[in-house]
Image (cartoon, rainbow, N blue to C red):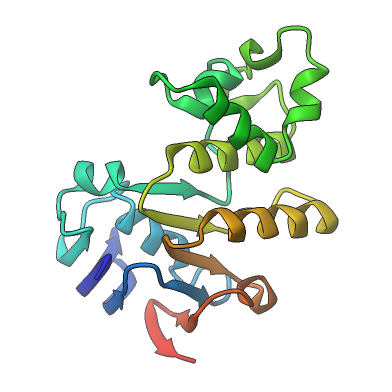
Length: 212
């Protein structure tokens, strides 16, 4: 199994966001998790991705339980793209050395190439504090390129095309589907049609998981 979630509960203060979640995801399996906003979907992905610590229950990703170890084994595209106050290049590579052809391929897949080519500084363009110098759609594409370039075994998608128009979002989802072949994918969305390519579905409502 690539991802195992056992007896996971999570609280924001006194409010229980997740209630005794148990999910096992096989290596190479794509699992869609649907549900309304506020149902706990994003919280679940942040826990799996090691952004939050699991205090009740256990999570393993590729056999690793620690938050830092889980983070190193996942690529994430969250609903609100988080960018560093750095260049486009550094936001894709996270400051790590990376071959130019790998960066180019990630930009091409995320449909960034034409836009980057129009910028005077290209990949070295500064995105501003919290990505303030780029649009929401551009920030989302940069985050998608980052996830593609990392090439992790497990991919976590949280409404990855939320900031994009319908046509662009559809084409990017098609690109992500191609590039996640053979990988383990957890994809959450409030739109069931966005999960049509997944192998298996479940619903997360009120902090609890229900099989579809």
